[in-house]
Length: 634
Ligand code: 3PY
Ligand code: ZN
Image 1 (cartoon, rainbow, N blue to C red):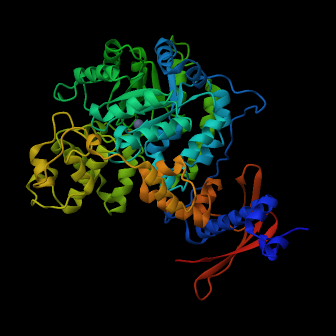
Image 2 (image 1 turned 180 degrees about the horizontal axis):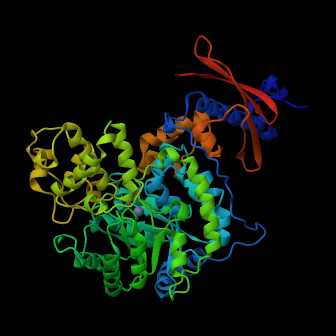
Image 3 (image 1 turned 90 degrees about the vertical axis):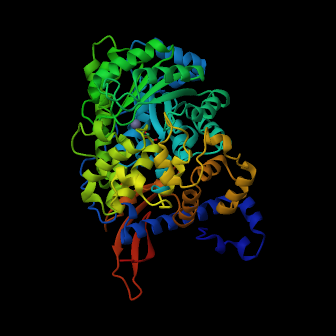
């Protein structure tokens, strides 16, 4: 007979031990778990329908009229061998040699990491990536790599999307077993904004590799080499993955007035990284300052100075980064980062589809399938509609970037932050402050987290009405933002030439700044004890590595995520429009709550609020009516 609920089961009614019941009738418990999940999901949908998703509150619901078309692929065909297969077979050293020997211009597609980080405030959900993953594996097999993880996405996937980032990685890996995955790792700052103890960094790297990461692009936000050592060693010793050590580019090597970051500075850094054990050198032009002629000269010099392949990363904030890519190709760069046409340009990477076309027939033809990538662009164009509230990059490329030097990945985020502080209309001033604060700090490399500190300090001074040049005259004891105090105390390491003494004085007062590598004085974390802490938070008997490292990177965000999941279940199963904008009466969605188990959910009716402000929502769940009561907070 059909048993509606576990409490109606005979064994339960006779009071026999519940564990026996689990052993003898496990299916019953699956059923009740599913029912519980469905209830939580209706609650989440109900909350979104009645009170909105905080993320997009107050913003118009986008039109979303373009249909989502997944490019054709044949699930019966095996996925062709790609770079991942080569790496698995030959190991990272041979992989690097192979990279340097290729004539083709090798292409990394950054759509699933940097492009959405830079255009959509890193809000892209896993489901939108997984939906197209099989097609990418089948037709994108000539890609060098897919940058699909790390940077800000680790934080945002937990904080705003309520997803487990490690699961995203494993799920993508299952679907795309053949193309190398690449991530952005902030060296000793992991995927966070401050320094982590060495054993946390090591464990995080090992676990990420176990989840499927192949190429670790590891950088330091001040180009401070001692900060890279632990991560580089760990990638080499604890994994079979590739260590792509990074030079962050700032300034202008062709401008004689800018003599802090010269060609020699970068060449020397590449040589150091080679000695430290890099498999590949990345030239990371996070703000898009490396204009075409600088790119040509620098890539030529780097390739001559080291025996390793060089991988060029840039942003199109200026509007001419496509030309830098072509000049880099001419200069012999081995691989370049691009993003799919419909998520390219402006603060993101240059246009992958147009570069395929531009290189066609050239001796460095990319070998990529133009038709497939054009179809893929149509897919991402439709997906981009969902994220319109976050789509706030400037409307045009601008040479202004050469002055403010703001990283592409920071621009939309800082603009959001300014708006939230009521400084939206004063954006041009924010930009001026950013530039001048950098000068006051002695012209530093600006990339997460150092770029965030420059942003924090700019906002702080602007709201106080203090010009950056006057900052050094502020009262001793002025309470600066925590990130500023940390950086000037040496918490992120040391910049080239050290910190200006007068700035340190006003920010730190009598406190002595630290010297040297922050990781060297950070105490080792007791991982076993941390697992106990995590168990107390999750109320589970085990603590797996996903939870351990998510907690170590972002303790509060992790706690909030656990609470959220207990209340609402796994938000990742909802289609993106329903997740952000809820449902309209009559609208129906299908949701796979577990492999092969699909729920069809339709919103029928939303009642007016009663005296207590409670609204009753009527849904149809697989054809049966279900109600859910939600408090209206408006
Ligand atoms: C990050 O660290 O997230 C970046 O994208 C830096 O460019
Ligand atoms: Zn970038």
